[in-house]
Image (cartoon, rainbow, N blue to C red):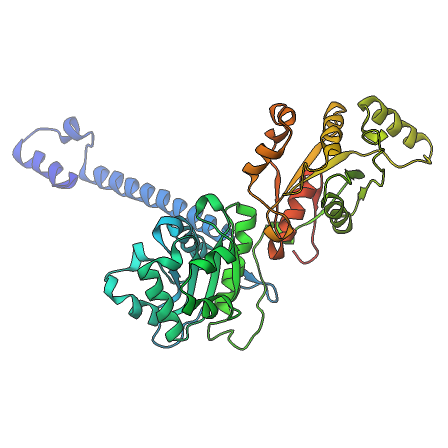
Length: 416
């Protein structure tokens, strides 16, 4: 019974009794008005909540076309249900596959992604799911190309001539492997169709700044296979706030020193100086007896800086930072150990870059705990994180993160 019924019941059953003594209302009208006010307050509360929720959704970053700054159009060919089929092996690919679907649904509103845990109803019907998908994503991790069901999905995709996107796990601890290792796992009869057919190849990243680039590459490859964009060869996308499109520069001059005893460090330093205004590379050379003069003491650094402010210096400018480039060849030259020690003793900030490309000497970070002089390890050299250095589309993000570590600040873009 509602409060109105209760009010009338009290008046009828207990003649002469005052309902106000029980309910706190002296008349039915007062009760009804109070209930209307309460309902109105609840509705206003939910309306305010809905408005704030809508504003939050509107502020969520979504992929936009670089050409028009508009949301891309998601279309499906006749008879298809999913824009993307996410083919992966549970043991080494399930977590990444779930992230790919979840984040793509935020970045590409309206996208339909097949994921087994959400959409698989009959394991015997894998081929029919492939047939109703527009693009097939092969998530390449260890074990994938040996899985019976994954091979069913692969063969069905190839037989139906479906567009394919190859996404390679990058983290060895998560089942990642080189393309060579993954190819060796693949049945010989499928190797050429998968690895030599010029399918888009994308490295999957787990660090947020790099992951958005991987997702953007997946989305661009996907959209180019939809009816709306099938006639195009490229479809650049952007997302508000992404590091890849931000511009950085230095308010104060930064002079970066990279040791010749550190293979690859000088090349990376020069690349940074070419990319970011306000950064210079010190040309000071290493002396045969030890580190260059600019690393000898913090007091000499301060004195040299003061002299430079007062009058021009004929010698090389003092460094503000040292770049330590970590790859397979790092620590092979014994001079580097002494130079790093001198830099640390002088209080010179050391920014570390970890090469991730195997073709450039990239290796797992755990290797450095074996090859680095133990005095440096024990002294906390690796207490600060090294910046991952990737090649390809992820390169810009690596350079931006290194620039930020060196003190760069964001500059406004004219095109937003």
